[in-house]
Amino acid sequence: MLDKPRLAKSERHERIVAELRVGHPLRVSELAAELGVSTETIRRDLDELEGRGLISRTYGGAVRPFATEPAVSERHTLMVAEREAIAVAAAALVRPGEVVAIGGGATTLHVARRIAAECHDLTVITHSYGVATVLAANPTITVIMCPGRYNGLEGSVFGPECIDFVQGFHANRAILGASGLTTDGANDADAMAAAVYRAFMKRAAHTVIVADHTKFDRPALAVYGRWTDISTLVTDVAPVGPLARAIDRARVLVEVARPRLAA
Image 1 (cartoon, rainbow, N blue to C red):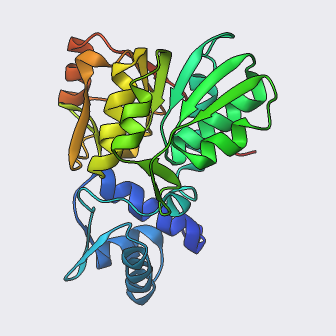
Image 2: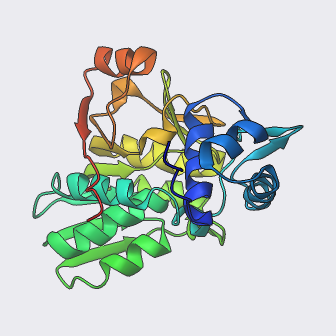
Image 3: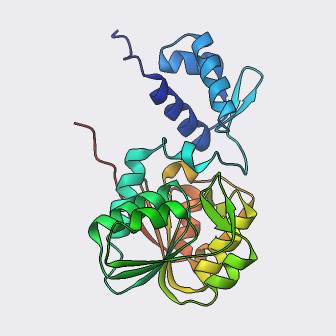
């Protein structure tokens, strides 16, 4: 039998986080066997991931975190190929002349980069400084920045000033990320962020949720959007089970964007 190829630490970390988010609690011994490393290496991996807020350690293993997410700077390093594929598909939905509301987050920043590269003649309303910065590179895109209290971990503003400002606009579509997707709808780990996303949805004719498969069946603190109020889900793997049935009942269009395989 051929030995399994040894994964780099970053690849092990991504595999561990992805498996926790879609599966059952993991044991150190099982992870060591699956990834072809020692149990000591796995323990160090789990300690580091817990320190970054990506997992919760248990005696002998780890479980997925509930209702929390690491800082957006940490999330940028995970699921990059999947997020880029989602971004390509989401940007293709945008038409010249539209007003688009874009929420903060790692996936929506990928979408914003793609929109800046491929779209033109847009007005974008956002509460994310990262989104505003990448869109500013395109001179045909007018960026309207929401006011509010700045959260450095998320690189975005929140609060009543932000929500009041959003309520003064109409948008053709809102493009929003999520901490989790459940049968109830789109969830976020931060109640203040969820309130801003809810405001974006109310002012938009269509809502597009952009989220990779690790968010499936992952509950978070606040449900900000019911499936009946969502037009499109752009993801990298088709949902299955009760989640898929809830999405189908609400007649949400699911766009599956497969990441490109590395050469």
